[in-house]
Length: 485
DNA sequence: ATGTTC
Image (cartoon, rainbow, N blue to C red):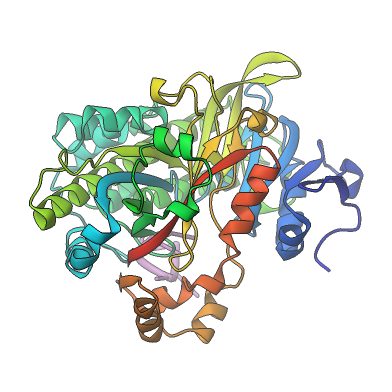
């Protein structure tokens, strides 16, 4: 059995591993999950989340979301808040794909209108939004201009004609983390990133055409507030990050932290993948500023992809993107560390929130949300597998106990290797088409790795977050077209 | 996730 004996049941949706579980734990570990999801978690989740609980400066608990699974250092689905004065920043708590995230875009088209054009739409998107390992984009800029992208994020896109002003408002943090400083970025990172804006990438990154069927609307009033106003309305959801740029930033600083963490700062960690530096140290601050550059590149990447999606829809339907109602619902980040103000032991305090495969979930009335979402709470986008659908949820004030955090996706149920042994990309494509999902892929092997059964049940994950009071289901979106990177 | 093993 994977679940440790020391685990205690707090409620049907919350479990706790006490500090007595392992030497060095400073706080307990808390896992949000139904018993079913808890039992599906791999041993690595419990090992890793209790290692996170040992990190200096951690506040309250090391958290794991219902979609938690084994990752680099931290579990994916992990969340840890640190005291910025005494705590550390750990690249393993953010992930290699810095600001991997999800964006959801509306149309005012319905399934009936899109169906006849679906093949053309997906084929054109597949051509116009480059995907796959090593893909490069159409935005031709110099290395220096790329540095401006890294400092400005979506604001660069607005200035250069790739964004509508309201897109920025509908993006977490306005599509730009302030304090990004390109002097902390290596030449190598710039070299890998400068031609990758507007590209999807590979792995579990995808672009999907989805439908909001009436029977899948959980909360009609909030669905309307989020822009879903008609039956079988079509939306576009996509998932990608900072590509080779963020990967290089993570690699550069992990290497640096490995050399200073113990020798210079005397920090002992249970796993070298948790290598870290005091947040206030020179190295910690440099990584924080570098990470923000990658965050901004990822926002710009998703923004330029949106620009392309609008062009494609406009060409296919012979109407402007404005006429097609192609407004953003929201853009959420999955892999970040951020200074946020939360209630800590009853007092407002600025803390360093690591979210690794976890989504911010700010509830109604929370500062930092667009006026439009003041009453509803922020839109939360939880991506499922390409076969089974995804969820749009709303943030809840109950998520204050996780410092405003909820789940981010399905979480793998089988390894990529296992999935490739069980499925063949070409056959999967044919099977999916029979079930009404037209899929194109940059890699047949990659497609097989993303087969539906390779992931946990997205309905279980979304439900668990709602039962735990972290986020509320608004509408379940089912795919009709998918581009798999 | 990733010029998928500098």
